[in-house]
Image 1 (cartoon, rainbow, N blue to C red):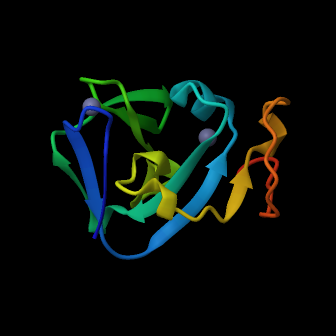
Image 2 (image 1 turned 30 degrees about the vertical axis):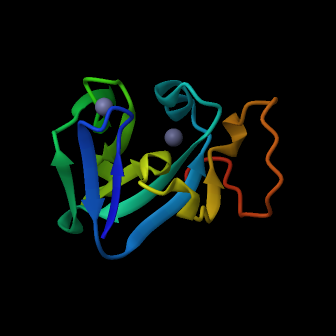
Length: 130
Ligand SMILES: [Zn+2]
Ligand SMILES: [Zn+2]
């Protein structure tokens, strides 16, 4: 069972089972939503996922896309989209132990900020992966 939580601890999540996705995202919406130059996601199956402690609020950033956050401290928690039905994508930095996360690729590198330098050899997709 892996767990994560927001900054204030009032919203948490946990999941078991396989991860469907482990990547960096450089898209404009994630950058702005996280107020960070890049973000990282773990995709998990909804059937093995649950919110714990409190429930987050969400903002629909585009039709069919919900971005979850803690209403108390504002921490971005997750991304859920109709095109990835049956999954939820958690912001990897909200993991209990974020140092254990292993990103496998980058998406939306066409939008990568010019002042962000990353020196890894992971596969890079200019847009989304699929
Ligand atoms: Zn919070
Ligand atoms: Zn993104």
